[in-house]
Length: 131
Image 1 (tube, rainbow, N blue to C red):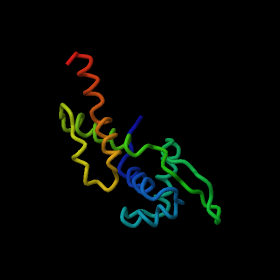
Image 2 (cartoon, one colour):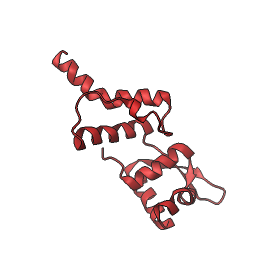
Image 3 (cartoon, rainbow, N blue to C red):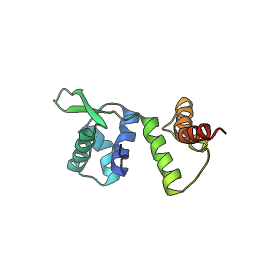
Image 4 (cartoon, rainbow, N blue to C red):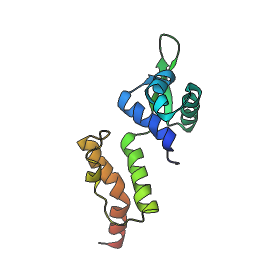
């Protein structure tokens, strides 16, 4: 599965924290900071919907569709951290999820889950080698 790009991550982070929102609500919250027009926000949301990363979840009283994130926050962030540390920085060995302890996006339980996701491949490799 491909990883979300920067624009998609902005929307995902907002939906993960805010819950279901209309495209206009998403735009009003993140669009100005991103220097986006409403049409840009809608385009990114539509692409994410086509990828299965967000989905429609009912309609507002004005018949505007609500959107929710489908991608799991911890799995997505874990995959991005793994990609950065392993493929970009070429770091080997266990990575402490405690590095992210100050993130407002993760609870203690999610940090534990992130640690397991980040280090899963290394644990499997060690087990295969009998270490």
